[in-house]
Image (cartoon, rainbow, N blue to C red):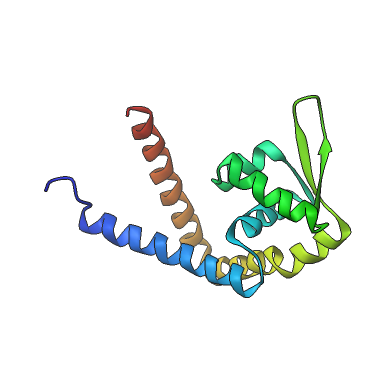
Length: 145
């Protein structure tokens, strides 16, 4: 079988899976589904609102998954949709949503920031540069499929 992942890719895939698992556990501990956490996180990353289109693009979630999570968050009074134009909407946090986001996605963001703040700046820059290089090369190869 010549199509199996290399030792390096197996390690990479293991690490990515473990990281995803930690995020999943944090979401559960904070009382949210993975998709709800990702939606709140993406909004927090933008401020207190985010174009719906950007949530789909930046989160990696399917449009259907984002819409399902938004319907649930909207029913709970956490977010509301605000028309921006005839074809686009922005997802905004309600006052209750801001409080929930601070207790959930905001905590995760603070954890992530603390981790990067504890690393030497050169290590942070190298990590980000290598990750971006991998992403750009992967995108290039994906276009060739």
